[in-house]
Length: 345
Image (cartoon, rainbow, N blue to C red; front, side, top):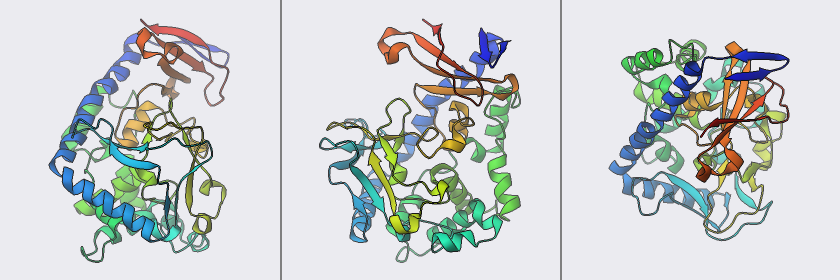
């Protein structure tokens, strides 16, 4: 298969490419199955925790649109993952939610004091420490959001797998010659920069929660329950903390980016959203698996830095029924008009 990257044409061995694509594809079912098994054990408890959290949010100044509900993606399957769905049609630009600063988990009391924190605390350290503090509280003192976070599945992303599991993954990806790479960095950064205690299970859980759920340096209840799909994104951020918007004053607000019909699920993009500039050229399907613990459905983005290659993979004309997958080739780090290549039939 020939790929384009700038003015160069690169030949990549088909087996190299499809090895990692097949690997992540094969990991999709075990990942979902593991999550489903965890949810089945405490199904009723999760429903109660979610209801308590929503009631707590609304009672303390949050706006959550009444036209929304949290339910199983497949209502007839009690092991199906949850999503946020429209009970009624929503217009473009309609507010989905607004979560006040004081109900979020943040590294500081407000944005101004955040900017005065030491550099280590302005990394993930401050947020991780805030999560550790919250989930270490007594049951009577812990917020409903803290209880929800404490109940989430543990060690489901690669960086938190057992040593044996990581060794197997390295073997399958040719010792990190294929993405994702830097599997150990997530924990090593915390241990070195934050003086983390890797012997404490709750501390490890807090690190994974921040790595998988935080936006900027914040954990935002309700917002962090929205699922990812780059082909069906219909929700956008109203304010951008990366550009200095005062989230401590405005709240964390999400709006619909297009009309949403009753029964449709609300989707974000975790790597191509309106405030995701720093991820756009760095986070593809393998990196999403590394950081968030799931294999995204089509469209997928694949980045091979060692070969200076980037491409998107999607169903031909967006129609899964054709059985054709198509590849869109880009110049690395600078988006170009899409080039069609038929990949699979």
